[in-house]
Length: 170
Image 1 (cartoon, rainbow, N blue to C red):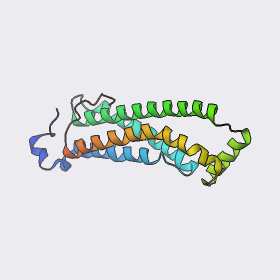
Image 2 (image 1 turned 120 degrees about the vertical axis):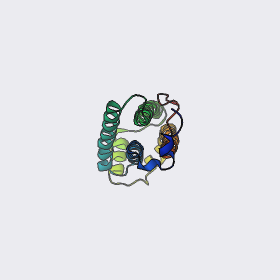
Image 3 (image 1 turned 90 degrees about the vertical axis):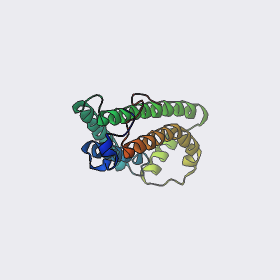
Image 4 (image 1 turned 180 degrees about the vertical axis):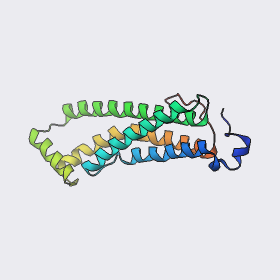
């Protein structure tokens, strides 16, 4: 289960429908990651919709494929990656919120000003400069995790290999 799909497909795996479905999953997956760096609120809404569609597709693909198949293997890997990424991002945001509320004193006017600046794509303000290190620290662990898992999975998919431990979070 860790080698190429089949010996005959090893020479040209891109002609196998399972191979093409798995690569399509990875293509959809990268859009979810890219939409996490939005500059406009509409892109945020689009990313939530795309995330829902991708998770639904992964679920449907897993449901209709056999448990020891190539597609099920990679769909399970991507599903676990999304769950762990979401968990890491949630924990990071909670910790950053607690830290910011204790260390950075923002008034209601500051928060309203910050929201207005972000909505207008005005990212060169003193408040944003104060909060930028927190944003980077919040996003870094989950972003590094999802890129690492994506690259590892994509390399295996391009080679036509199964993931060794698709149900593992790390």
